[in-house]
Image 1 (tube, rainbow, N blue to C red):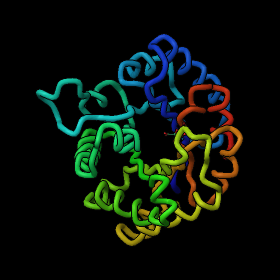
Image 2: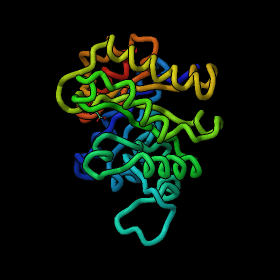
Image 3: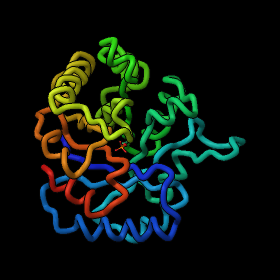
Length: 249
Ligand code: PGA
């Protein structure tokens, strides 16, 4: 059975002190929710070790990791450093990394392999831009991203991947994919996994939806058979809203 997951991507928000407070609030808000959902938060790097001290039910993710193992890469944080800090997950290939920091499929593929080699679970993001959706190219775009980013992994490695479908036109815009649009492309993504790794692996792969998912629309999105949870940006910065999303299953 694949896992139901709600992950909060804090992006570049919150001071250290405010981040620790939010983490405590999230922990308290979700501690009574027993619907089998894995709850993950992804604060900025500098918050990770302090946040780790105040969570127990909630799991910890980084928002990025380096594409190299170690050495002279000023400003980077390596996968094995994250592991040593008690981090369990890492978001890789977020559209903001792809567009603002020009992270290519090749770079993302290196990051995924380093994360896996260090025992981290990658939350690998894919998703099309608005013009690509309007030109009906979204299926080709996500196929290309998943093929180049992930499909040279062994079956054993692929089993440790969490996918997040995030249409770029829905991120931070207040515009959500409809439940039907989400289901359609999630089912398509799962069919790609079936073709590459077989039905059993595909059935066990969690595919999250991201893009203006909030406490109002989560229930409808998560009701779809191929939507296994959410990667939440803005609504993850309010513990009460985030908890409503977690309880939306
Ligand atoms: P949003 O961000 O929920 O603010 O749209 C989602 C994401 O970028 O992961």
